[in-house]
Image 1 (cartoon, rainbow, N blue to C red):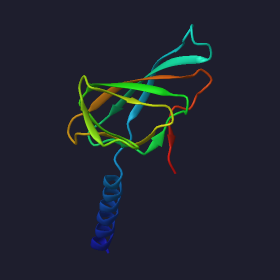
Image 2 (image 1 turned 90 degrees about the vertical axis):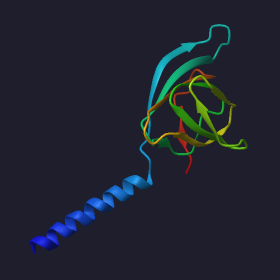
Image 3 (image 1 turned 180 degrees about the vertical axis):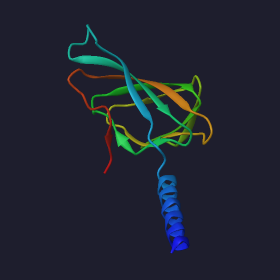
Image 4 (image 1 turned 135 degrees about the vertical axis):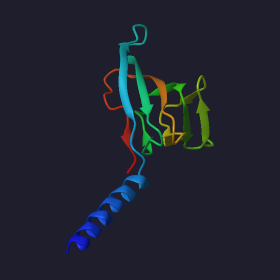
Length: 136
């Protein structure tokens, strides 16, 4: 009886680990500034810090249709794929752009052992509150 219970507990723990390994952990996203653009009525600029631990990624997603995004890697490396473009790894100091209406298919830390961090600057409609919409 004790051995059967231990085996059941071990199997449950392995199942949880396997399920966790199948989906990388999500990253941390923090709005670091939000300011209206005075000479562009109805438009704002939002800075967003994106931090991924080792192996972390976010699901495929879109951003607001009005959002133009410029991102710079501050730490580590990011694996990025925007629909219609080849997948690429961006390292510290490199940057990329997402045009309005882009579909972000891959956004992941390129390393399984080091953290990664980038600053994404959004120019978008001021009333827009949802910055990321996961694809179904």
